[in-house]
Image (cartoon, rainbow, N blue to C red; front, side):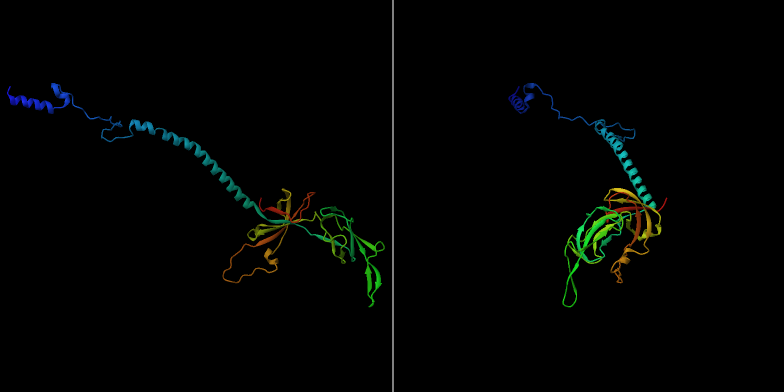
Length: 295
């Protein structure tokens, strides 16, 4: 072997990889590979259908959740629809069979009872809210006596005490005392009110109904009256319908002749009789009325 050949072998050994030195060749390294994602089977035309088996396993619970939501939501929606239909039907039926309003109150005719003679109030027997009967003494009025004569001949009157004549004020009917406008010791004129009474059997309801329902009302129709003070329903009946709107009786009736007129629904007063029986009287109490206009 020549010198040149020996030098060439030495240089080759120095430049060769470490695994190949000494005449032993190491196997070549292969780059790391990842397993291919599983794919769904292909059809004959090469088109892939459906997700891969792993993806299908992950997406499988979604349809089950949707089915569970449908089972919960659909009954709720059905119940809401049925309830809305029932409420709507009842509202429509009530609007066809009844005329209702809460713009109503209990009214009566207060009677002011006084003495036919001028004098001084000595006694007021009943208290406010007391029930009295016809002929009961409500108050006593002392009539002044003449105590002297003035220079121009006018008699001078005054109260001497026990020697003064007295006049009793009696109840003209069975009723309830709702006010005592004067106090004991007050001087009253002839006919001035000392006690105010009301007959509980002569009470009625003043209801203001929209003019659009006027044609549906008639005397004699049955009415259900809900008295707020008693929290109870009492029967009533349409007694009369005023042939004029409530605005007609105002001190200054509304008259708008300008160009900015706005149409306003007027109210028609309707008088409704009712029987409270032995229930306590509350004049002016708010009520709600429901007039039956159709069978």
